[in-house]
Structure formats: C-alpha cells, structure tokens
Length: 283
Length: 354
Image (cartoon, rainbow over all chains, first blue to last red):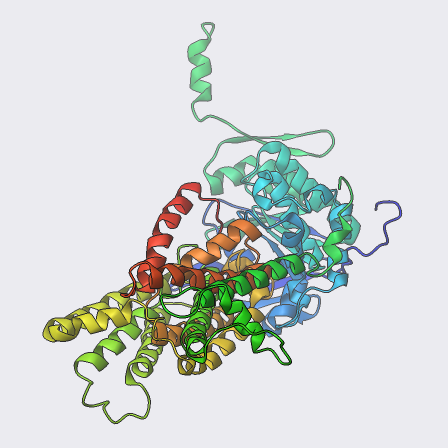
C-alpha cells in the first residue's frame, strides 16, 4: 500500500467454490459431463486440456453465461438461485480476449467493475470511485488511469481487466486463458498480479490455461479435461506426466522437474531421434 | 500522476459542466439564427429586438409590425423548434441504437422505423384518401407513426424468433429484410398510383417547411418520454460497450436493456419521422461528431448529441429556405448532402469506436 493513502481499496471475503455434477450442453452436443470439484477458499485450480475439452464451457457456466445442470456454489450460496448482481459480486471473470473500448480511460474501465453494486438507475458513488483509484494505485496501475485503453499494450490492458475483476470484490476469480494473447513477459506480469492478489486477499482462483508450464507454476492443483470429462486430477507433478499428456494431447513431451519444485513441460519433435541418427556418423 | 491517480476522477460529472454550457450556447445561437433568416419577414437584425420588445416591462420598440411578428412567431419559430426537436431526437436515438448494437454504422432507421412511416404515408396518399376523409386527426402522420412502430415491432419479433437475446446481429439482419419488404410494398403502391408519386416523395423527403405549433405538440410527449428513458440508460450503454458477455458477468440484464432502449428510441424516432419525414444521416453523423470532440462515453454522448443534433438540424434547415427561394430544398436533401461527404471522411479516419 502506498504510504499515506487511506485503505479504501478492494476488500474481499474468502469463500470456497464447489461444483457438483456440472454438465453443459449446446443443443444435442454435451460439452461437459458430470464435473465435480471443490476449491477451498484461497485455492488456485488450473484447468488444462486440449482445445474443445470443455474448459471454457465450465468457466462460462460458473460466471452464468451458459445454462448448466448440477450445482455450483460459492460458500453456501447456490449461484443458480442468486440475482445477477449478487452473482456478479461473488464471481469475477477475466476473459481471454476482452472487448476493450479504445477511448475509454483505464479508470473508467476499471470502474465498470463496480456495476454489480449500483442500482438500475443509479450511478457510481464517490466511494466507488475512491475504491477504484486506491486499487489502481496499489496495483501500480495509476499511470494508466487517465490513458485511453486503446493506447495501452495488451499486457497493460489485461492488468486493467484484472483490476476491474478485483474491484468487484468477488471472492472467486475465473480466468479463461487470461494470458494466451500476450508475450511471455506480459504473461508473467499478469499472472504475478493475480498470484499476489490471491496471496493478499485469499482469492479463490479457477483458471483455464494453455501453457502447461505456466499452469503448473501458478496452480495448487491441476485438472485435465478431455472431451468434457475430467480425466486426471491432482498435484502438478501427478497430472503433468509424459504418459498422461501423450494420451490426451497426442504430444511427445519431456517433463523436467526443477530442484525448486517447478515442473517444466518441453515439447519434443516427433522425428527428433531420426534427425540425430542421420546427423551422427558414429551410429 | 505516476504512482497516484489524479483525484479529479473522484468528482462526479465535474468536467461535464463546460460541455453542457457549450451545448446550450450552440442551441441558443442556432435558434436565434433560425428565426432571423428567411425569404420574407423583417430585416434580420430587428428579430432579436422583436423578442426583446415582448419581454415583460420592455422599453424597446423594435419597429417590427404585427404581420412581421406573425412570420417570426407562427412560421419560423415552430419550424426552428421542430427542427431542433427532430434533430435532437434522431441524434439521441442514433447514439443509443449504436450503443445497444455496438455498431457505429447504425442509424435510428435501422429496424424499419422510416420505411414503415414511408409506407404508412404512401398508403394514406394512394388508397386511403377516401377512407380517412372523416378522420378527426391528420391521417398521414398518424398512420405513419403507427406503421413505423408496427414495422419495428415486426422486426423485433422476427429477430427474436432467431435468438435476439444473445446477439444484436440477428435483429439487424431482420431489420434489413423488413426495410426491403416495406420498400417493395411502397414501390408497388406507387407504381399503381403514379399520380401521387410527387406528393408522397415530398412528404417522405422531409417537411419542416410546413411545421406548426400543432406538430410540436403532437411529437413533444413521445420525444420527452423517449429522451428521459434513454438518458436513464446512459450507464448501461457504457457497460454494454464491453460486449454482451462481459456486461452480463458484471450483473447487467443485457437483453432487457437492449429491448428497453430499442423501444424508447423507436418511439421517439417514429414520432419525429411521422411529422417531418425521412431526414437522413443526422442520427448517424451527429453522434460521431460528438464522439470525435467529446469522447464516446455515453454520460456525455447522449446530452451532447441532443444539443449538437438540435443545433445541426436548425442550421441545416436555413440554406434550404433561402437558396432556391421561393421553392424549398427538402431538408432531407440538405442533410444527406452535408452528411454523405462527412461520412466518407469518417470512414477514412476511422478514429471512432463502437
């Protein structure tokens, strides 16, 4: 926190997320079957799986964008029984490719996160504005407050999207491939921001991620989805195994365990061995 | 700046006051210019004096005869005010339509309001003359108003049948189909009754020239209701700028907001189209002018569109009455003539945002 600044920034209650027998279908196609999961308050669950595995559908069910069967609860509250505003105050969403109005200032953009707390004909109070200003300052995003979003880089924008999610003060943060449009430096910045917010506020995070190494670095646990079914679940080391990844992604990888516990997934070329043989006259 | 947020953001609407003042001045200047200039009537500089003379306890003698005052008050003033109301309504409705459809190229006639009104007027002029002879109200605007609302309602029903709740695109496509259908019926009727083609076209092309205080009284309640409802949804229109999905996750009832805004904007548009005909480009171009000078946030965009739209149409109506005097250039022609080139420049710069 910045010295002298009064503590008006986002305050989040800690809550768990429970999913029971969650299913999603689009017409006749069942894209998610019988998904069970429980995230303790403050836990980070990483969702991995090939394209079309049902990760996004699960996340869209949690934020209320698609109809689902089964039940999704935050704390003791069943999301299906809640009004839009209450639900929006419990679950915040960071999409993969957010729609960003290019001439809206960073401040006004983050201020949209206060919408769940404003009556139909109301407008943002001074308290809402102060909360957003203080939050931007604490996240080191103050210099973007009066800049149009269109002038910011992809990574800067994504950090403002995360700030918008934080000012909803929702205890559960839903990230749908939040960094797949960013370069590696901005990926790290954005994920570090989420990680520090989680450490500070005890946010419960469920994130679909493309990059397996990054997913492993930031998640407490991983779940691997394949064709709408959770096929592997457990610690990072348990899920990120070459046989598992080969079976469900159809890839050849080497999994390297760093001494500090980081699991690194390295893709291998299928014909690498053949190349080596050709290039090596001794064999 | 730097690591602090400028505390000016805490003030709610503080910076908007100057914009409102500027908009008010623009409208007043336009009204004054609109009442001063015309083919008949007193010398232009006597007009402000004539207004001053009629203030309570005024010592001024403007030298304006009562016949000349009648020209100012019974002919020019209703025309100027109607131009203002029509311009304001089309601009506010256009900005709102652009917001709920998140498409900068949308105008308030998109869903068939103008086409429906045109068909309504055509029906009255062709087959409905005898049927409406005994009506207590002027049949053309009344039928035009009803047909405008009917056309948009039909568009909405067709669009809704294919899932309007999730996307505005189906609605826009349904509107395109509705406009084509309506225009086809209108053309067919005109082919069969070619003697009224001239009458129908001068009705459709914009008729501020025949404006009366009665016209103003007729549209005022609809325009007022429409404007109040649209202004009440300014924050929602800003929220919709991040797309349906994200707005929904922030607690916005997206489909309901879209329906309310479309109904309100259509009501006002239908009312002004019924009395003034089809005045093109205002509802498209004015919101974009305002976006370029004042930004695209709806808090400011709607009130400024109201002011700039009113000022623009009042001023655009002036050349029409003097250039080809004593004949009148239809206002719809003037706005399209000014609007089309602007539109092309706009497409080139592309500095506008949804």
